[in-house]
Length: 68
Image (tube, rainbow, N blue to C red):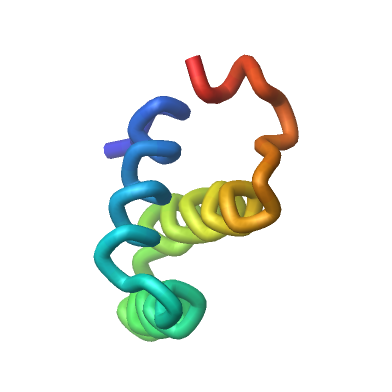
């Protein structure tokens, strides 16, 4: 199951809210666990979430249309 772009942004925002300053560590652990489990789709999804988290932290999405 793949998430829509909107859903990826929503997950990124929710993870940031839930994890606070530990968001980076949470994402690394999540990707590592999925890698160990051999879940390539899960890894790709969480890397996409991590990319959006980085953009939110920086204060600017790479494409403002992605927020619509």
